[in-house]
Length: 489
Ligand SMILES: *[C@@H]1O[C@H](CO)[C@@H](O)[C@H](O)[C@H]1NC(C)=O
Ligand SMILES: *[C@@H]1O[C@H](CO)[C@@H](O)[C@H](O)[C@H]1NC(C)=O
Ligand SMILES: *[C@@H]1O[C@H](CO)[C@@H](O)[C@H](O)[C@H]1NC(C)=O
Ligand SMILES: *[C@@H]1O[C@H](CO)[C@@H](O)[C@H](O)[C@H]1NC(C)=O
Ligand SMILES: *[C@@H]1O[C@H](CO)[C@@H](O)[C@H](O)[C@H]1NC(C)=O
Ligand SMILES: *[C@@H]1O[C@H](CO)[C@@H](O)[C@H](O)[C@H]1NC(C)=O
Ligand SMILES: *[C@@H]1O[C@H](CO)[C@@H](O)[C@H](O)[C@H]1NC(C)=O
Ligand SMILES: *[C@@H]1O[C@H](CO)[C@@H](O)[C@H](O)[C@H]1NC(C)=O
Ligand SMILES: *[C@@H]1O[C@H](CO)[C@@H](O)[C@H](O)[C@H]1NC(C)=O
Ligand SMILES: *[C@@H]1O[C@H](CO)[C@@H](O)[C@H](O)[C@H]1NC(C)=O
Image 1 (spheres, protein in one colour):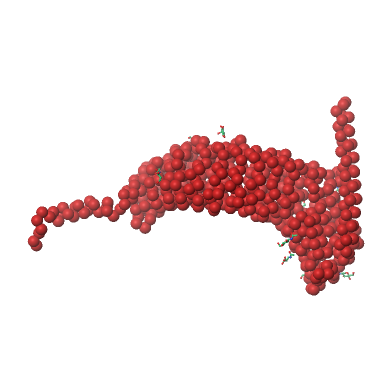
Image 2 (tube, rainbow, N blue to C red):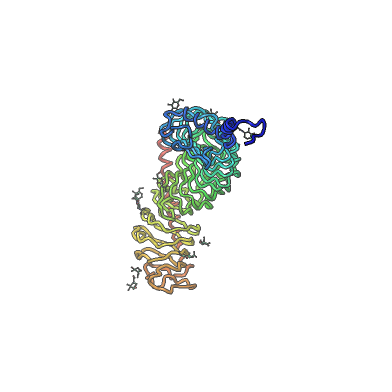
């Protein structure tokens, strides 16, 4: 009852408390967040449905933190929105996800700098007009930057501040009007798996820090003037599975990609590659799609679409359509350009034997010996009309042995599992793998010693190659003479 002197009346105290309360409970930036969101709402057209009331945390597509004071996620994908973004967007200090793809948003992109919580940025397929300086600086937790298909951006370069985002796993900025070189900064992104920068105006060479990176998906195709230099660095990018480098100005040879064992799609067409394709390409068991046309390769190969089986013989087959057979070291042709010998012996190939060999109807000799081939011998090989020699010795083949015509020399020693289901306890170290498998399907059968088999093989090659070379040379001479004659008249 006895009030201390000079104390304010209770009503005044209450009022003061009411006034101060919001300021005490909420950090200043919450007011910022709400102001930014109100600004965003006013700039978007139409205003997204469900954006009613003054509390943005209740708006559709907006997520806030547990105190309902900070926006953590903005999801407005595919809402046919036009309009622009507020330049104060990076006041949303706890923003983690910004998802705005597939709208018609335009105007300048706001700086997102110092949004240290930001993990995902999706801005693809809009119509933004420019990228600010410091656009992506200080994004220490960024994992995904996806902003492809913004073709109306003023020309910009890849910001080197991105190195601050060491958690990046995805960079998609295709068709985004980027020019200049690709920074040599990939040692800053130990988790980067996807890099897509197609359809820009990038120039210069592939940076050396790409080597040893974890990138699996590399799209740098269709640069306006073209990336240049060699692609040697690919040989150390062992995680690669899909590589699109077509429509550039790359030069030099196609490198040895034998360490890229997961590679299934390799698009190299429309460049200036030179030299002979490395044999190791044939050993890549997952490689299914390759394009090489419009280069300066020896034995040029057009689009090669091989089968899905491990051993990509059809890859080689597609080489054969052109005049490649004179250059392709594994293949010997006759004077009409038909393949007569395929020699894949001792190439460390793994995988299975492709039934596609049956399409090489002129094939006389097929050497697959001393590799790591598994699976069974395709029965279809028995129908090769010209076949004289099939050497599959020293592999790891199994299954039933097809019955070849007696005209075929069939060499199968050194395949412990071959014909296994006929005789259980096969060969062992003796090397008589053919026991019980009716290996007497041919003249010189698998029980013959490898010395004589090798001799026979050698003779056959020698003869066929000799005949092939002689007829090829004489054919070329004939053609040349005829041309000269036409030239003179
Ligand atoms: C980002 O943070 C850095 C360092 O704290 C500061 O220098 C810079 O001005 C900030 N940028 C923006 C746009 O706030
Ligand atoms: C993008 O903006 C330009 C003008 O800046 C306009 O001409 C064009 O139609 C817009 N494209 C789309 C897809 O909205
Ligand atoms: C492409 O980039 C080069 C510089 O690297 C520039 O000179 C050229 O104007 C750019 N072309 C277009 C169409 O932007
Ligand atoms: C290879 O390319 C063809 C044509 O582009 C496509 O249809 C096919 O799915 C591709 N195969 C693989 C394994 O990528
Ligand atoms: C065959 O494959 C095995 C296991 O993958 C490997 O140890 C061996 O060296 C290979 N042999 C040849 C000749 O490549
Ligand atoms: C042989 O070639 C034809 C036509 O190119 C193709 O359809 C067929 O699949 C090929 N056969 C094999 C076993 O690959
Ligand atoms: C050789 O190839 C030609 C076409 O390139 C074909 O018409 C001919 O039948 C082939 N010869 C043999 C024996 O397969
Ligand atoms: C042969 O293949 C079998 C199964 O496919 C495998 O267990 C074995 O290790 C292989 N042997 C060699 C020498 O590669
Ligand atoms: C091998 O086994 C399969 C099924 O197990 C059988 O159908 C086939 O006749 C056998 N081959 C021979 C030559 O016995
Ligand atoms: C193996 O050959 C013998 C005679 O040489 C024949 O009686 C038998 O039927 C053949 N077996 C098979 C599976 O071809």
